[in-house]
Figure 1 (tube, rainbow, N blue to C red):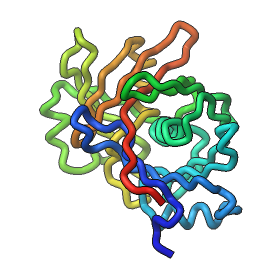
Figure 2: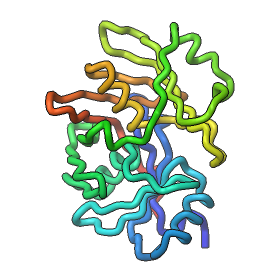
Figure 3: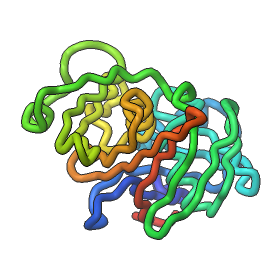
Figure 4: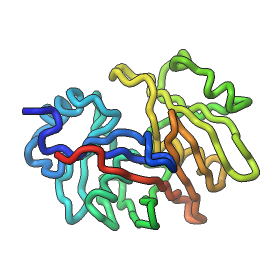
Length: 220
C-alpha cells in the first residue's frame, strides 16, 4: 500500500501566494485504522507533524496524532478537517470546536486551555527569529516570535517542537498562535516558518479564533 492511499494531504495556513502551509494527512475513514497501534504506526510512517483520523464525518469526531503521541487539540489539523469535511462543529473530548468559512479563510473557535503547553519566547527583532538555523537548546515545545509591526499586529514566528519525532521545525502552528493571541489579548497576523500565514482574533468570552487558507495537495 502506498503511504498516501486513502489519505488526503492538505496544506494548512498557506501564504497569500498559495505556497507553504503545514502538511496534514486526513484519513477520511478512520475505521481502516481501528486501534491505537495502527494509527500511531501510520502517523509515524507518514511523518507529518499531525495526521487526522475521521471517526464520524457528520459529527466532526476526529482523532489527532503526531508521529509519537495523540493530541486532544491542535490548530492546523482542525482547520484542515473543517475545510475538507465542510463542517461547522468538530466534537473533541475537550469540547466542541466551531468552524466557519469566510472567503478564502477557514476559521475555528477554541479555548486556549485546550492547547498543548508551548513556551512563548519573544525575540528582540525579526532578524533574530529568522537567523535561527536549528532549534534552540532545551526541552519542550518552543514558539519564538518578534513584532514585525506591533501597531498592525503583525508577528514573525517560528515553532520548534523539540520532541524526538524527527520534526525539527513546525511550519505553521495554530495552537501556539492561539496561545500567543490570548496572552497578548489582541488579533494577530502571523507569518510563520518559510511563508505560512495564520490569523487570530480573541473574543470577550476567552475563546480565540484561528484562521487560514487550506489547499488540497494530494487526494487519497
